[in-house]
Length: 260
Image (cartoon, rainbow, N blue to C red; front, side):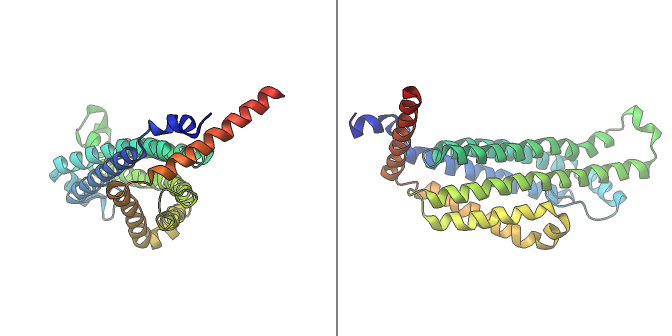
């Protein structure tokens, strides 16, 4: 079979188009995540950190800024959905490098996103409590306020668990970038370091002390990758060459298996 025939399945993929699609969805993720965090900050809470302050003050702030809080919740949930799409596009983009590594990366990312989606139930719980359902009448005002604070802090703890899986995802994507020939290796190292940073959430006290540095590193590394994909794309010829090599390798393995 000719080289052109081997490359045909990969020529249909359009790696530059996939790369720019990834950059666009990545950009939308950042926009929605940042806008969501801004709205949450207006309500006096955060989507990342545990709530600080006394329960009564936080409850009053949520009541006074319930619309901003709901918008922050909505934008945060949309950002989770967009990151799922980013994960799928990364799988498509890096499959020629190593299918096993990119599959594992996708698994870690989707697990982290699932944890964050479940955590959103804790985040919206304070508004459910404030709705004043009859069954909550057994609790006094200080008790319901304490419950609201508890749910907000549970949300922050669950997000920390999700960030651990995101760290494993970034480590593998950094590795895949380093192995690839269609993206600059300089994009992979900061991403892998950011992944190591998110792994500090395995020990929350350490993560709390390093949080500002970890967040800046993670943001800078992912934004750099997003901008490169959006503006520069990938080297289509090298991407296709990796695809051809992978196709040949899988074909040889199938022929050997049939021979046995």
